[in-house]
Image (cartoon, rainbow, N blue to C red):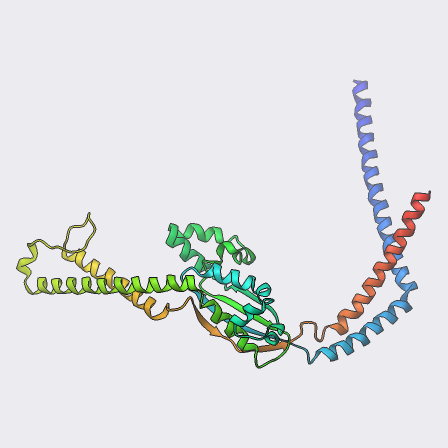
Length: 336
């Protein structure tokens, strides 16, 4: 019994020692942190004249740079397009490789632009206008169950949805051209690029074929619609003959009745409306939804350098002093 009491007392003493050790470590760490904090304050106090000079110098230089940049502007043009007939990848590939293609003089001739217009182009980008509903509509059309995909897309960020995996789903895309300086020829460049994209032979042949097939299908659907309307009109005038056999276009599982004829009529009207829309609006490889004018805005750092530059100078100087002291400390540590 006495041995157990002694053992328990020893365990309690060990626990007390462990707690004291932990508190000692915390105390030492806190003291080191305070020492470091005081050392930093003493360092800046010692170098206060140097950093004051750097800060004032940064303010003066920043002021003059801001004054110089106040008239500097970025010139750009935004054009919103709607690709047709699965031309998304073609248009994106063309824009992404355009910078390289413009170095070829023969290619720039095809765009009907000269070297001065090309040299004024700073950057060109094409990005989808993110509309989650566009993705959902496409997925629903292919697989159904829109709610399932909506739950998945809610967890995706905008950067992911901008990727090539989803860009074919979006209806509208923003083409943005950045120019180095203002010029009356800037719009000629964007028009030349868009005109060249619209003249692709392969997609234009596909477009012509699609329009031809749509016209043929539209004529047949209109003939079928007229036939159904005439037949329904006859049934309406002669209800006694409703029991006679009816020969119309219908699903094999359907019985040709007035209700099935009315459904077929409504379906045909919907199809005809869509085909007429295609023949009226979808005559090009893409539609220009909005053709923006050349716009300008101040350079992004304007009115900020007077604050950012002195802070930057002080930060760089502090980093250099830190590296210098770290180098000396490492040398001393190695020698010892």
